[in-house]
Image (cartoon, protein in one colour):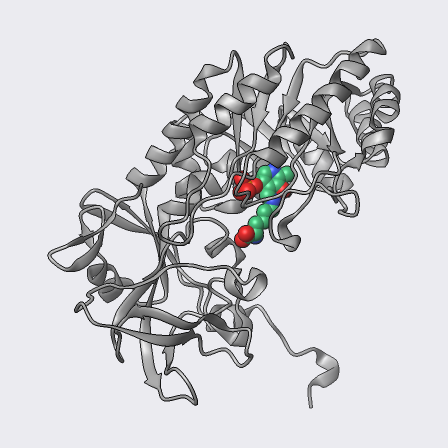
Length: 420
Ligand code: LLP
């Protein structure tokens, strides 16, 4: 459910017609609906209410915009961060350091030290080597780091290969059969307080079955570690719940997910932790674009738009589908290819798709672009960095500026040895 609806034939974000935003800010532009964000945050949080103790750390990578983080902080969300940049954003948004989890396979010594300094709640260690390095830094700083050990459960998440993370051949976590021994050694290392296992098997999961299999497997490991005399007081079950990108697709609901978790973890006796990203932010945003021109092709016509793979990378990277809709459709449709202006063929959003009839100058949106949209944008082909807008009822504001090529150019220089 979202708050992007046609009002008198014009697509609106809550009470704001999208053409008003395009006229003021230009295109392409991401538009977020605060009401949609709040709704998704609450539905997920309330669903987990059936669990005795649950903490939610929003996966900042899915949408790190400061205004988005501020809304989620107000809803009681913590943050799952994967870099010091994300950590500083979460803090700037007012998130409680204690509610911040630090994930990621390549945390540097400087990042570990900064996270210790601000007193984050949990480090999700991806290796024994990382644990030993963190321990050394913690001892030097006179701190104790609360830690989870990320385990690779070797379960196929059944999602796109590039966003699968829980198979043995993926770089994430420690191998399942070595995890108990590593946990035991780290638990005896000064500077660390081992308290949890963590897992995350992939993103955009369309079925709960692989999650259930992974949770069950890691639950068994938890019992074994306890049996060896070590404390496990928390379990971090990661994120990964998918969302429908295509009208008509059906995905697991947060309530079904929570019921499965309750069934599997009933006798665990831990505080459960979650790291949802896409399920919170996916539906909260659209990418609005203008049609530059419609060009005849050998087959279907090419709809050339002013958004490109640098603004929304998911189709180019994962062959991802995003529904495309005209902002002011006239009821007619045609079959067309949708492409951006970038000079490579991967800059393709859809081929031979049945879409609203659009022509030069028309506005249109890609839906479900609130997660892994603006955050993955770049400036390839010396294009601007795409701006972001948040709508709240009748109000709206630019929450991230368009960064012009001139600003980026100003950060570059010609060295002396090239001068003259
Ligand atoms: N926790 C960890 C450790 C993760 O690596 C991720 C996502 C999440 C939580 C959140 O997963 P979610 O609930 O959003 O599925 N750029 C890709 C998605 C990459 C996901 C990376 N990790 C895409 O556009 O589909």
